[in-house]
Image (cartoon, rainbow, N blue to C red; front, side, top):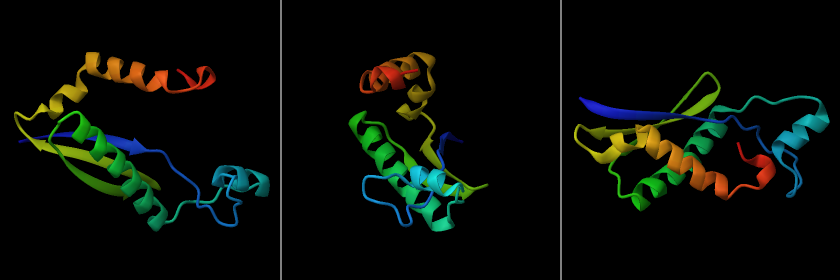
Length: 113
């Protein structure tokens, strides 16, 4: 049996005809439409998220294989490991709370939860 942790990666809109300092969401908002991400957009988003998660796992010295999946217009990242790996520590409430505190410390006060 293997352990698995899955994360839902937020949807993004494609950045077509967008000025460098303007996000795709801003452009879609100005056009009054919200574009659906293409399959390639979702794969690209999943790759970006997987790179981030891979670096995070490397820093924490946690073993795991990353899988990327797209379904229902969203990108999903799964981290899989053999039984007995240290991946299970990521699911502990204490670990999650400590990680949230670290991540929140990098956000501006208005964006903190």
